[in-house]
Amino acid sequence: MQSRRWRVSLGIGLLMVFVPMWIISAEPREMTSRYAIADVVDLVSLGVVNVTVTLPTARGRTTGLTSSGSGFIVTNDGLVLTNDHVVTGAEKIKVTLFDGTEIDNVELVGTDAQSDIAILQLPEIPYLTGLPTVSLGDSDQLRVGEWVIAFGSPFAVHLGTQLSVTAGIISTLNRNIESGGMLYREFLQTDTAINPGNSGGPLVNLEGEVVGINTAIIPFAQGIGFAIPINRAKSIMEQLLTHGKVLRPWLGVNVTGVSEATAEEQGLSQPRGGKVTGVLRRSPAEKGGIRVGDIVIEINRQIVYGPQDVSHIISRMDVGERAVIVILRDGYRINLMIEIEAEPVS
Image (cartoon, rainbow, N blue to C red; front, side, top):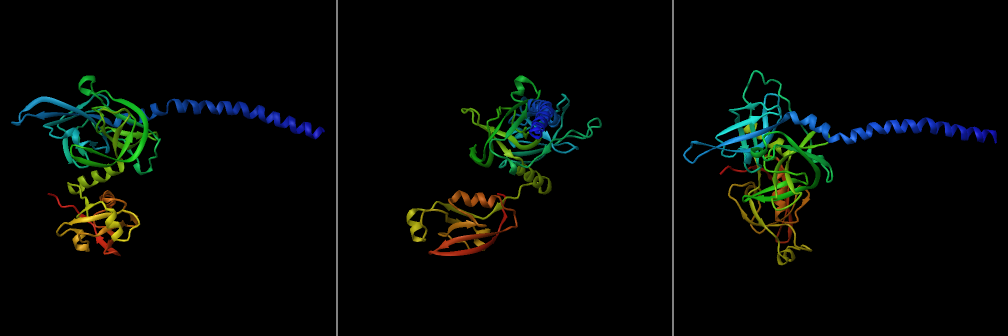
């Protein structure tokens, strides 16, 4: 009985010791949660810039008309990533740093309209050494529902170039959107508020890492914005700096959907795959033996459900990589090994 009382007393004593410790340890967690986004803003904002462009007239004379977007510094010597559509047609480019410093004569180093990526180079200025940069993350690790923060200078023409931020979540991954007759693939969709002027600014996770570049909105919708995954932007940037252009993987076929009649002829239980309707001359497809009428059903062990999957899978490959492409021809399954080449520049 005495032993039982001792155990009860010991349990109460331990509870009295650990409960206050638990209460104390909970306070810092509450403070961390409260200021989590503010801490990220402090970490990232120094590397975010406003990009203002001056547009020329049709005769080449400057009109004084300007448009504005955002960008972020990725190297200490002043390389800035932004959107192609922010600087398209610019006569002059000016960058405004976080502290209000204005830098003129900014050079457009490289641009790619298809991916909507542009690279700027700030001029060498003695008092601008060791520029603050942002940290680039891994967009392949993103999860739907993850918190993100959009940085930029929305409506800078009316509100000024002061930085502002909005927060939200990743709504979905790998979203395809069409704009201006171009199809943009595998965008990040977010409900973070993105407005004109945010374009080119970073989309950042709670680790303070850039995971995307704010790019587009649907004007008539609410809570639907899009960003370029930073992993794709890094690849585009590297190619622009190395080659001066983007080397896109190319197979060289035109494909369409598979009808029920064709599926039955080829022995498929249901319509799937991509039916080849055209093979371009001197293309990897022609060299590799693909013919009109073939049904592409697999590429590198990935099932091709429809024609869009062919271009999607090929687009994620590297130039020079070999693709194992499985086709159906006259009811027979054939494996082809085809080396992917760079798409010719027209």
